[in-house]
Length: 368
Ligand SMILES: Nc1ncnc2c1ncn2[C@@H]1O[C@H](COP(=O)(O)OP(=O)(O)OP(=O)(O)O)[C@@H](O)[C@H]1O
Ligand SMILES: O=P(O)(O)O[C@H]1[C@H](O)[C@H](O)[C@H](OP(=O)(O)O)[C@@H](OP(=O)(O)O)[C@@H]1O
Ligand SMILES: [Mg+2]
Ligand SMILES: [Mg+2]
Image 1 (cartoon, rainbow, N blue to C red):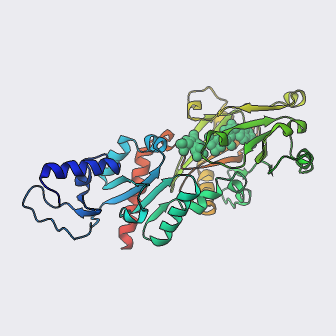
Image 2 (cartoon, rainbow, N blue to C red; image 1 turned 180 degrees about the vertical axis):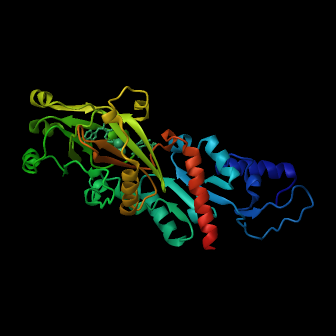
Image 3 (cartoon, rainbow, N blue to C red; image 1 turned 90 degrees about the horizontal axis):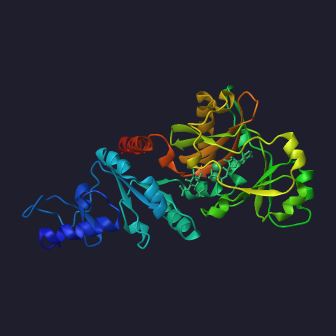
């Protein structure tokens, strides 16, 4: 039992800090820690009856437990998001990775982006034992887009009833290990150079974003499998990053690799590493662009594509990198899909996420 109010506040402040509550701590949630349990904090001061044993009743609060790297927490959980969310009764609570997940909470949502088998096992076990909690997103579905081959499987077969655009995936093949015959297999598969070489696995490290342009078959021997070799598609140097948060879609333009002319293809040999040309710093919003290149994909087309993708991938938080084939009328290629990307770079991301969680809270209440 807490001693004086002062020590209770100190204890609450400590626990709030430990669990990442950035507001006034548990008091703000109408609850406080009693030993290892969260109990309702009823009293404003001394003398108020606080029911010691009553478990914490979640009254109109929607609690999002999060398991993110410190870098991701810093970039995603910005003060404005927390403040706007709190106004809607939505609270973000840090998951303590040093304690059993089932002993924490209760949560309405567990939002996570951590890598490694240990966390994958923890969250899968939790998902099995807590069907009442929405796990964003299901770990098995996330795993699929951590492999650049499975990431894009099935996209080219999507049935897009909207005819204002068409979607493809560049021809690609996986090279799992060094072998003298790799180059032959690439040529036999009919892949056309130059090829973009990408690490097959996405593991959150910078290495999984180290890409190369290979101009000829002989230079393939310089690459380190396992990799995906993907045909380069001329697209005028502009990429469309399509952010998805549930049913909300936001598109931003990013600078990208320039076209490669036939002359260049004929003259250049070798393998060239290139930087993250389409990172957030490479916003194309202020660039002078050819309208036929910079024109955004048609809205109905994007909506149809994202609807199909949501069903195919089983994910709610992702972005896709799309390019328009240069000179085409809305022939698009999806070249990359990212789970839980850098949403802070998405316009109005705070309001988008507050609306997203608020709608989830309302849906959950309707189902009760
Ligand atoms: N098939 C392709 N044709 C043309 N350009 C490509 C192709 N694949 C990749 N690129 C270029 O390389 C950049 C990075 O590719 P990609 O998005 O696949 O890598 P990534 O490491 O997953 O990047 P991020 O996850 O940061 O978006 C793209 O933004 C684009 O500029
Ligand atoms: O410009 P965006 O938001 O796409 O940059 C993302 C990038 O696409 C990947 O999603 C990165 O995640 P990993 O693939 O796991 O490396 C994101 O890094 P993160 O640290 O924010 O998760 C980039 O923001
Ligand atoms: Mg990308
Ligand atoms: Mg990516």
